[in-house]
Length: 314
Image 1 (cartoon, rainbow, N blue to C red):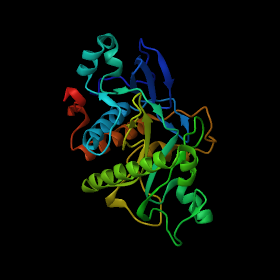
Image 2 (cartoon, rainbow, N blue to C red; image 1 turned 90 degrees about the vertical axis):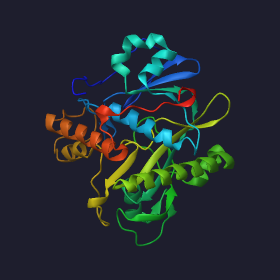
Image 3 (tube, helix red, strand yellow; image 1 turned 135 degrees about the vertical axis):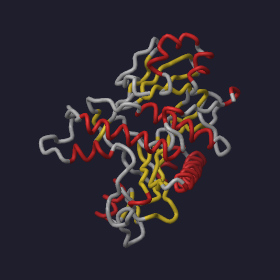
Image 4 (cartoon, rainbow, N blue to C red; image 1 turned 180 degrees about the vertical axis):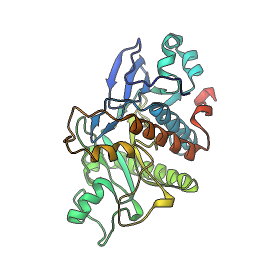
């Protein structure tokens, strides 16, 4: 696995629909997309110059690992993640297999719901900043006397706008109801809470606290609501090691914490593009962090993990 070159930017012989901070999305046909998770990494909403080896592979395979377990709870957009199955369906992808293998998901095309579905099980991040200032979340009061990183009982559905650039903005459930209607808003809230609670329990058995997570949903051509994009990954969730958890302070995260720590220590970067170069030691530490959370969750080393089969292929 160490011989696989990092992918900073994929280039496939398919129509490129979108190149985000991490994922490159290609059109395979009218109803099918190929989502390729690169090894790009961003911090403070800025993409950094150096790729993180194996990061895209971790994000894709953790998502597939969770989706296999979640199939009884809800429907999702993943058709295939095993490279052989993807090539079997679309032989033209064989030529570029070395670029997308183990980092791509073949998915149903959907119309994304333009709301980030967030569940907060602990108060941290932007929620803590607002609460510490005004005692509210998205302008609505929370219980008095909460401390940073404290567990929230019950977990809070805390939606946000989907910002194309810059930071997402926390919004109220009432705003989502006005935007999408009561029925869809309620379904999004209930499904997101169910996924969070499942992920929290599974992670907890492995010594990991799932502090919060962000999910996305889309509607397919038949009108079905599907879970889309990445699911319960280190990029979309805050995973904290149980052994170092303590209320009243920030927690170390099982993700790109080495990058944030390095950038926070710079005095001459104002957190706007262009981003500074990352030292090799920081790149290596971050790659190891992603592979470690994969191992802790799945119980398997990334190099030996065989992704699941889905749908009619299983």
